[in-house]
Length: 534
Image 1 (cartoon, rainbow, N blue to C red):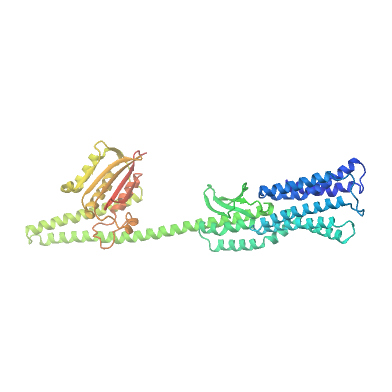
Image 2 (spheres, rainbow, N blue to C red; image 1 turned 120 degrees about the vertical axis):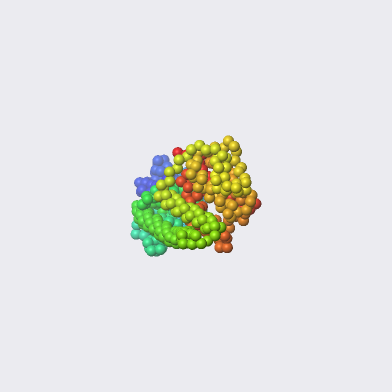
């Protein structure tokens, strides 16, 4: 609006001025001459208001500029009814007015030129060149006016200089306000070269969303003169943002669609217009960025799948090795016991025969337990475990589990559960998890051993706690992994499958199995089950 008023006033002066006689006669012609002269006085003030549209000036400067302009307009209408024409002698009051006019134009033009020049100092090349060109245009026009003030002859050297400066000013205003595409391309070449290098690096190097965003956002902001740029995915999630700082009072947001997302650009007041060239450039950059992001996602997925496959292959190898080792030990022992009883049973003493039978029973139970664990793993992996919760009294049920697990050692475990606490739980899950936790506590921990249960935050929490040394911090991340056998130097008698199976059962029940360090020391395992199961 202020630009339109500024150059509309200048255009009116140039066009309407040709309709007024050089020596106006009559009240109407003299009034028209005063109006055009007042419009010329207001030109630098309107140009100053144009710069204020970008950034507010100080109140003191506003008052000085407004006061000077108002005083000059009032003085213009207070001049005598007839002004001397070109070539006529200028009386003293005319020279006084012309000096005030030149001072007014010089001061306001200097203020405008300085504001424009320094405004684009930290902007991208296009915005910076436009602001600087407008500053040169303002300075040239002020010098042209000053040259005319000092000349009373239309063919004199100052008049010729004024015409050349006015022509330079017109060209600079044109380049600053509406630079042609070829000029914008030339101005934008540094950013374009940088963007080309960025695009090349995106296609060759960038392999993750974070790296792609880091490489592309700042060049996008530079090339289109944006204050900030953000990239969001199709769901609106913020992938990355670049902010150059110095946010403005009323930023303008422009959204540019790209493949599976959007580029959101926050423009700067000094940035170039987002015209056809800029929008097309943004669309191109958006398309390339979208392709790079898709490529990065595919690369990340492929990498995750490769890691998962390597992990699965390693687990399979571990499974085969461990199963072969664990199965070989009881099978070999059982075979030895059976062979001894079959061939030497009638020659050995009764006590030795009973010892062999007990060993045979223990190894058979161990073999059956290992086979059952392997079957559990296969069923859990295939999601073939049916979870059928029912209402159970937790204290009574936990007492039965501890009794069946420990037998005579039951007294070593304290059960802290309210008598009336009930929960919807699958008895098989409780048996698999709690039995494993209690056995591990007695095997690796130290008394006192506590089994507790409570209901809070819409979950039932069953904990098994001991006062042993706990789990070393470095081993906690692998605690629930299959075949995890504990740190070196720690006595290991299990297969490394128990906790993995227990957590899988808990998660099949829509719950979880967690580990915490006990207070003041020891291990605390917590089975978390939802109150309602659907």
